[in-house]
Image 1 (cartoon, rainbow, N blue to C red):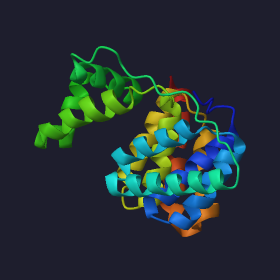
Image 2: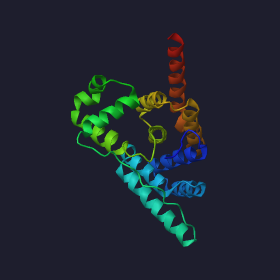
Image 3: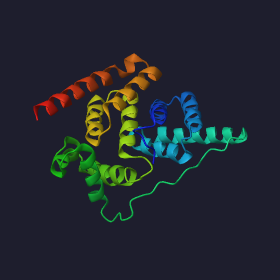
Image 4: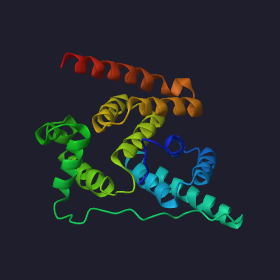
Length: 224
């Protein structure tokens, strides 16, 4: 598993891969994939990023990213470069209660109770989405152990910032990342890398939300 709290080079590449996959800049994605592989990130680790992105950026973007990775790997093979495939991801063994497993993961990530999650607006209006999220996203995808929850949150935040127009969701994921123990410096790293790649305007609202969330978290801790 990637040690996302130490390897800043990998984090930067994961952020960039997520961003350019989401917005469909395959030329930039190609360069990011080469760079990640040159850093020693394994093929399976990169594949796992695309598996995760499928749930947030959508399957068309994810599939195009995977196809781009195939092209990059073929190009490198033709140039005599052998990339490390790496270990395969493990999965949850007993999936007889996928809803319960997913619910437990969602509770851990959000810090919310089961009843609070069930009373969320989307869950009450469209309960089927709640089932899909718990059984597929939080059980099937988060249950794969090649990427940590922390790494997945970082990838998710980068994806949402790239997407734009989903500020309330970005805010909830800042809180989730903090709940999981992702250092604030890594959240700022996402925003800084995104600003370098996509421009100041693209990250302006994300930066503003982060400033407010972290100030609120600091104040709440001071009051305890």
